[in-house]
Length: 335
Image 1 (spheres, rainbow, N blue to C red):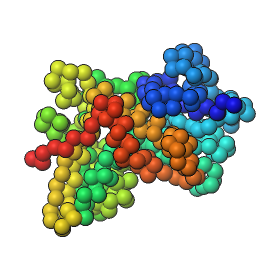
Image 2 (cartoon, rainbow, N blue to C red):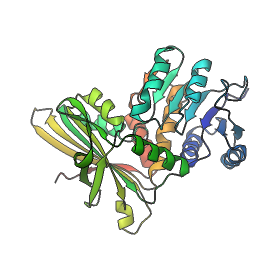
Image 3 (cartoon, rainbow, N blue to C red):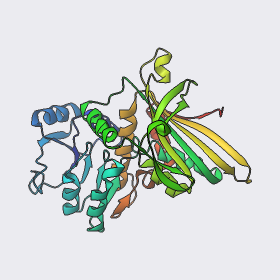
Image 4 (cartoon, rainbow, N blue to C red):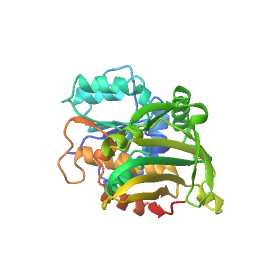
């Protein structure tokens, strides 16, 4: 008997394409359901993927228009303001991950979870590129006895739009969050205006003008490491690879400060990069989380609960997948 499919809501876009590629690479036997409002677009995407089916979804219906059809897990790849995917997943007791919610819109998801905490595992998958920042950052933090500061700089190539849905969701986040949620001196605050403007160095040393962004990575890393200073900044421009005359790439700069295992001052800089841009890196995280939720990695499926991506992703496996895909975590020089 064929297993029930994984439902990818919004799976016909750029992120969906990359996620299905990663899933196909490790679990080609898993059937996929590509869902969206546009049936033709969903069916075309499913035909391209293979071993997949396109379906039209009705987010106003409790069953999403799927009737009693069995579904194995739900991944929502766009901003689901109605929480249609989450409500459906809880009603079925199946895993759920969404990747586009902003921190200012987290309350409805938390409330939904609190009212049915034992229904299903729910992943707050809107860390930057779904674990690409936090998984390497927490491994770096292990080299410290005390982490005082984490500065994150995401470089998005101006050619790396990620598709119309990604662009629309990102524009919504920036419009609704003109200030950047930050941790300073142990307090959480909002940076705005000139206080939100900064810069960081790309892999090739180029100084990029940046501005603060309210990423859930800030809260997750602050809670996990105890760092009293955590901030996330984004720069949009030309990536280091394009300055070399190569195609676009994406970069995440991680700068740490604190004390080493001998209680001596320590500062480190690492850069997470993917040569093909943000979407493939996002796809790696989503695919690996779905594998972990369902036990496709050979371990026991994830129990009901509320999770950050970094709580489910193995560093060694993540780095192996990243390197297989051409990406890397590069240790850099502090200047």
